[in-house]
Length: 112
Length: 113
Image (cartoon, rainbow over all chains, first blue to last red; front, top):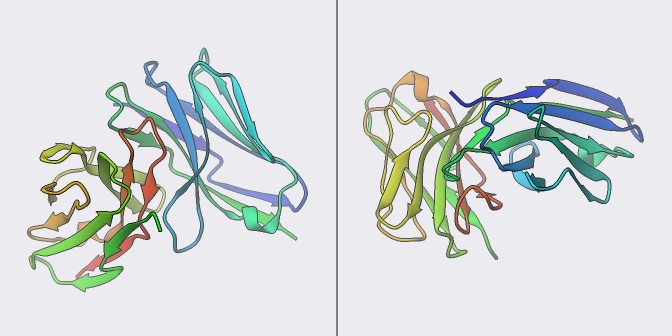
């Protein structure tokens, strides 16, 4: 079936450094790739998304890149801060656009 | 305030005792969905609804039922809960489909003994 693989499962970085989380997807028909942040005790919240007609999108310290040929996309967080500590999920939509396939999540730890 | 609400937030029950988890959104969204979240497995979709009276199975529908009689409500029903349904459940809604931002509820932690 359709699959989204996410790496690494845990990422620990020094405050102020950059963090990169990578995802690969299997359905070549996928055309929407969101990233969600989940803080402890809360539901996931969208932080950035990208569509297949765009290669890169940036929003302040957060950026997402998409390589359609290789079927992978990445989340980049620069100048990390303590409030960036959370679990991050990538996802890809299926062709029907009524289902998202989610990665397993990455726990990001920002060390002071 | 635009939000998705779920009730209850925490529930401990016994095997076989029917339960319902309610979900309501006040944003007039067409699309609603239920997920379960288990460690190391991410979010897995249980059921979704494209509009009133229109629902379909997600990846893990076995043991669950849903209904969408009103646009704002999308309850999740466990007719005969089993221990393998112990999980964290999230309801979500979006304006039209999964090609738009999904708004998640706060989650319901269910334990079945």
